[in-house]
Image (tube, rainbow, N blue to C red; front, side, top):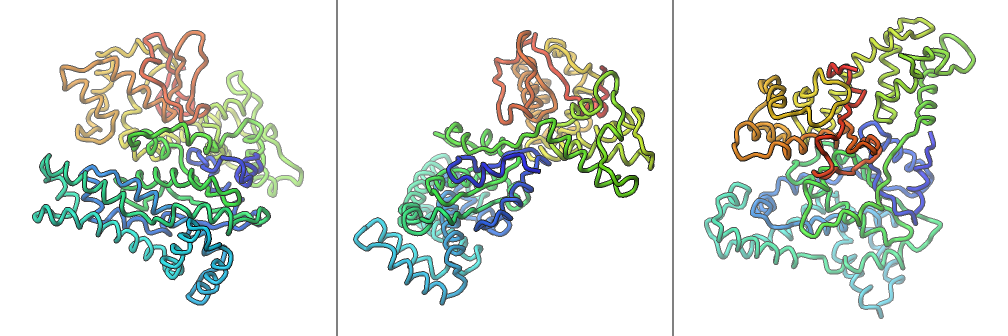
Length: 513
C-alpha cells in the first residue's frame, strides 16, 4: 500500500533517510519496495558486516572500559565500509582484474593537478586491491591498525596491563587518566587521511550522473549482531556517518531503525557535544491514518474470507457489527492499537479465529478476542523494549486494577509502596531495569525524593506508550505514537496532571472503565 513514504526515500534531495517506526510499523516493507524500484540498491545488514569482531576485540574493550571515546574510529569505519560498498557496486569490482580496470578508469577521471583529489587515488591504491575481500577481512584490517596504535604507547608505560575489559577495571585513577589521554591521541592519529576528501571525489567524479542514483539500505539493526555494550555506540556513529553522506546528490544511505532502539541510542548513549537537533531532519517517522489502516484490514478480510464465501468484495461492515458500547466498531478496535498495521491485523485475526466459520462477528466475539489480544500486545511491548526495560511485564502491573484515567496525586508514597509490594517477588533488586532500580531506591534509601521518582517512572511508561498524559486542564492527551521520540520533562508532570492507560492494555491490566 502506497502511503507516500517511498517518494521521500527515492528523492535524493529530501533529507529523510532514517526510517523510524515501532515494531510492525512497516519499515522492512518500505525498504523492500525501495529495493524493487529499478534503481541501483545495495542492501546491507549488520550481520553481513561482521561487526561483532569489534565487540569481541580485547584491545577495543580495554580502551572502551577505560573511558576513551572511540566514536571517531567508529565513524571512520562506517565511512570506509560505505565508500567500499558503493565503489564495488558502481564498478562491479569482484577480483583483481576488475580492480585494475577500475583503477585505469578512475585515474583517467581524476585530475592529478588537484592535490586533494590525488589523495583519493592514494586511497584507492592502498585499499582498492582489497575491495573484493569479505567485509569481515576489511574490518579486521582497519581495526588492527587502531589496535596496534592504541596498544603501542600503553605497552611501553604499563608493562603489567592486561588488554581486556577486566584489565581496564583494575587501573588506578592515575593510570586511567594516562590511558585516556593516550587513547584519545591514538584515535586522532589513526585516520585514513584520504577518506576526508573522498566524498568530494564521489560527488564530482564518480556518482555524478543524476539519472543513475545509488541507494544503500541498512536494516536489522535491532537484531542480535553485537554485544549491547558496543552495538549502541556503533549505531550512534552510523547515524553520524549517514548525516555526512547527505552531501552526495546522487547517493542516499537509508537506515531502518526501531523506535525504541533509536530512543536508546540518542538518550542513553550520547557523548559530550552531541546535538540531537541536527539529526531530526533525517527521520522519516512512519505514521498511519485511519483510512489507510481500514484499507489494510479490508484487504486482509478479502484475502481470508472472499474465496470461501463470495465472489464480490467484502467490507469491514459486512463482517463486523456497526457499534460496540455506543462506539463505531472500527474506531473501538483502532483505539486499542498504536496505529500500526501489525496491531490491527493481530486484533482482526483474533476475532476471525474465534468466529468459527460464521459469516458475522458478534460484539461478544470481539470482546473475547480482546482478552487474548491485550495480553499478547503487552507481551509484545515487553519484548520490544526488553533491552531498556527488561522487567516491563512485571512493572506494568503497578497499574493493575486502576481506572482508565486518574490524577497523578492519587499515587502517594504509601499507595506506590503497596503496589510495589504486590510485584516485588517477581523483581530482582540487582536488575538493570531503571524502573525497578527506582522502586527499590525509593524504599531502601532515606534520602530520596518521592515526587521525582514517581515522575521519572511515569515518564518512562509514557515513553514506551503504556500511558498517555494530559499535563494540564487545557492540554490535550499526549501519546508517544503521535509525538514519536519526544520526551516529557520532569516539570511537565504535576500532581493535577491526568494519566490515561492505553486502551490496548485494558484487559491485560484489569483496568476499570
